[in-house]
Length: 232
Image 1 (cartoon, helix red, strand yellow):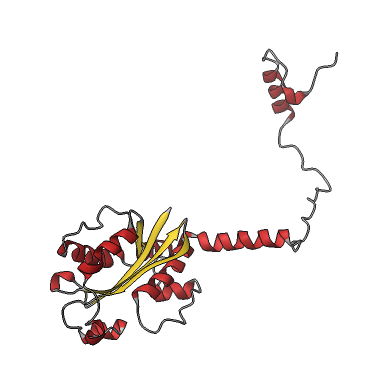
Image 2: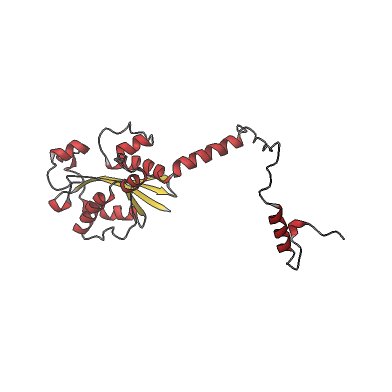
């Protein structure tokens, strides 16, 4: 099962207002494990960079001036995504921007892909609790020490850890793998023998119920196997 965790950075909040994508980061999962394959690119948005947006991701107009246009990397991006399911935090935001960029350069959008929104997953699993990426990283002890500002690739890496925890996959797999390693190394203590009750529990069946059960079984042409063989 191939999935792509991805994130974007933009010049603002809405492509309808002329905002553009300035960074795309993608990380490949296979059977919910990172493969190490990534796609990452900075983009020239062909417009100015509002100070509010730059404060979030740190990408200035001068830094992006010599970066490729989206149309120049669109085919590489689509090839990396392939037909995989897409995973994003607040997915509608990222999908809206990416699809707008694809349509603007004459490419098919990603509307046919399965999209998994980790924000919706977190709100369903932890109703009433903070569900931002930062809050979920803190909840699941996902290390954010290498991240000073928002960045599409590093946020995708963090989101991959959060997604696996939301699915219960990473934690379960790590525990199982650790127990396997301990068993192979002989580190696990031997299984304790089952303890028997000193006095058996009294039967819950009355004598009448037992007689009724035996009478019912005698109506069958063959004797019930759990009653044993009849005396010869």
